[in-house]
Length: 81
Image (cartoon, rainbow, N blue to C red; front, top):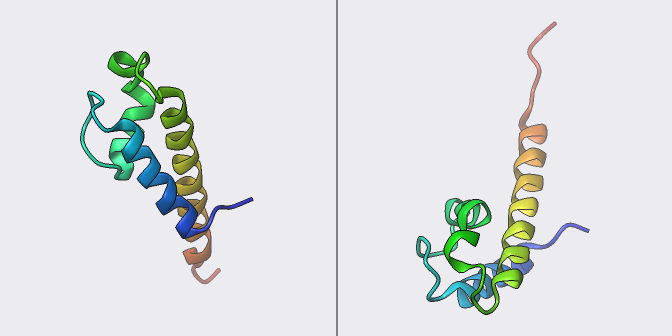
């Protein structure tokens, strides 16, 4: 089931709270979340809340991809044949 805007916003807040003090770029924009999924394990895998933060990050990316793909499909307008 797709998450609402508010669900994602709450997940971002929870991600920021969990990763406060981690060795990573600051914030929770999509680039930071992508970085965390790809590289976050290097310096942070033993920190408290890492597994939860990783799951949240993956959920946010999945929902973001759904939105981007849906938007691209809705905006696609084929030219005249």
